[in-house]
Length: 551
Ligand SMILES: Nc1ncnc2c1ncn2[C@@H]1O[C@H](COP(=O)(O)OP(=O)(O)OP(=O)(O)O)[C@@H](O)[C@H]1O
Image (tube, rainbow, N blue to C red; front, side, top):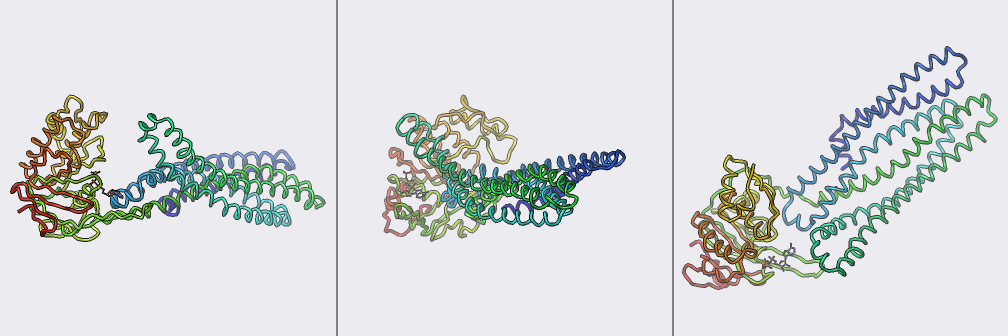
């Protein structure tokens, strides 16, 4: 993931890196000038050094600014790019896969993990500039004295080994924290969506706050603390080695060397100068590792979001003559319970202008059948045939339907291609559904969504009307409506849609309206147990040949 992001912005990254290298190089040059000034023989030499010092200082400041600005921009772009990438993968994956992965994991990738990866780019200049200063400082040491330089290499080797071992241990903790964070997002959702329940039940609220949400927050905190502490302990180990090295150099290696005063002044200066970059370097590396862990999580989550291979279609929905389900099945496996729910095989046929009621007890499989019918689930066996052609492009097929499921989502705007009269049509429908005094359509958007559940469902119905698709599916739409409007829905709106030639599938428990149906499908435990042709008042049983309800 990091490699991908780096490839994406290669040019800016190279420019920013060059600027960082220049900034680091200039910093080292500055210290050599300071050392030269301290031991300069006369005033003329100091004046020349002052001019050089000023030029290098300006170059260092400029290069540092350029590199910081570019890396900051890279970080912001990386986050935007990642969010776009994750969102595109989420849109492209199949609905079933998304259901299985779950929203919280995707949200965690979109927010925390992508922010952490983006922070990597802010850390890069710190790491680069500091690394250059440290390397340049070492080169200056080598120029001053070879034995000291070799001793420095030994110290760096020991430091790196310690750091590597710490890294292996720390990364395990950071991985656990990153995984737990995905679960934490699930609890965040409960915190908001369960706000009513939590307020109504003090004991439940306390248990949720302490044992569920609190525990998860604690796990993330403690694992991150452990991981980062190990890293920072490694940084401490690095600092210790540096001090030990300074002592070794000052009191053992150069103590009696010829020209020791000049060499020792140089060392003292270099060490003081290098301390801050070294610490900066050792502190930035753990943050970069945190970014790597997040990048791995994003990779794991997005690779689970397999592309359903269903390119979006801009085609307008096609009217159909006959839609048939031949032996379609779907299964849900409930891991914890080791339980399997099987729907089907289902054989059904639909035609335009047909009003079909789908009825059955809770959990009998009505919604699942509706999801299969509208193409949200791919049949595990059997096939769907539209006007004699087996469905190949599932996305294209789905454009035949408008559906309002019981857990529908209401967007704040009509996302249909803006036509001049969209507002006008929308407002006309709002009046028809007796919502015009509450909400309006302005510029393709609803003026408010702060409505009752029944009103929001009416608004969803406005959207479905405007979509003008040939097949409409209502999953217990009327359940939240008052008796008066329920009557309007069943006795006026549904017949109107039928008269317009729409096929309408209504999942319903309102048995007093069943007589309005052309066809009544009864379900039990995932099976269709009866398909009643109400126009002929002749119920048929499941063992009969699949009924062509269109005929
Ligand atoms: N996303 C899912 N993952 C796993 N199992 C599911 C899922 N959705 C539904 N099920 C299972 O499938 C069965 C049928 O559920 P479905 O929602 O289709 O029933 P239904 O007839 O619409 O019920 P209701 O009248 O209560 O809305 C249930 O036993 C349920 O446990």
